[in-house]
Image 1: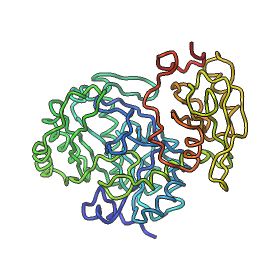
Image 2: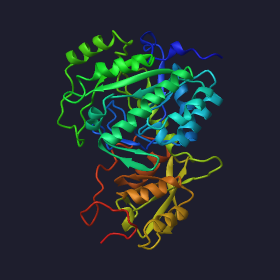
Image 3: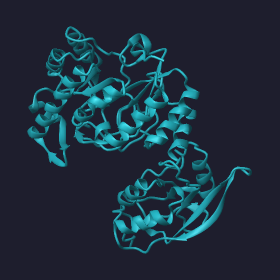
Image 4: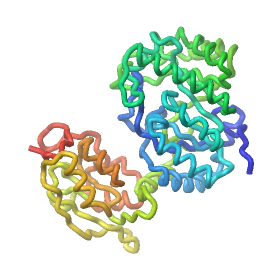
Length: 424
């Protein structure tokens, strides 16, 4: 079946009510820090880039796509848009695109990137028939860019201020040139930030139009707490309209952008359904690698009734299996935790101890153990509640929002450093 690029709802206004898209959240790391961006929060009613309920491996993402198509057969586009940057996670991004192209040869593929690290992958993107790429270019003047970006990490080096902005811009413009050379449709996103780049948006439009960008999306920035720009108000709708009209003299405009989440699915503007969210939760609990069998879930508990113990304080973990006939879970084992001390080695040892567990339910946990365990295929979930309800809910892909912990404070009244030394 041939690929029909007219079916892309983000690039073709006439398609947006008929065809859906799905964003596969396989790219958690980012290579720049924008002063308006935070990926800490996840509210299901919040539509903005950088937000996702789960991060999936490529094979989990393919399973999720299979399930999503049964619920929403009008999906015409598979995109990767974070929650970080696709090319700060190039292995996961490219593997996902290969898997989708192999199984769904007719599917439109697209990626959304800041453009810093995409250059080396453009030829393969073209080979995979990735038809659309979005570049977020907020400034073509490094002085303005330096106000927008806190830092840029490129080839394992950190850059700041003007140097960072110049480096980012050079790579963005080179990427735009190369995308067009390989026949890939290129959309440019420019985020309107009042008092920062609002008077500069037309300069961006003029520059990218001269380089044959196909469409421009002048979109209002989203005010997010706990960011450098948290005190900047969102632009007035009239300002946005006027900028779109002026920029429209240079390039076609996308005016129906919904500032989508990194796990958005379905028709643009619609929230993810509970059924779709359940399928994502189910996919996240599958083995990350082929042939891997993880039938159990581990729990940190003080007394064996509640999920109520901090990971660093646990001296043993309860291991549960799913009893499908009885629609319940059953305790099958109790395993000793590695002794405190040893830093990262302690968490590597724990990953080995729980190697047949797909998830570990705790009251809270530090970043270091979460990073190690996640890399070994064990999802660490901070919950509080009755063990049986939590374990069965995770096994069956239920929405666990009501049990999710909002903080990482534990018995010693402080946040966890995750050093492996235990608490107290």
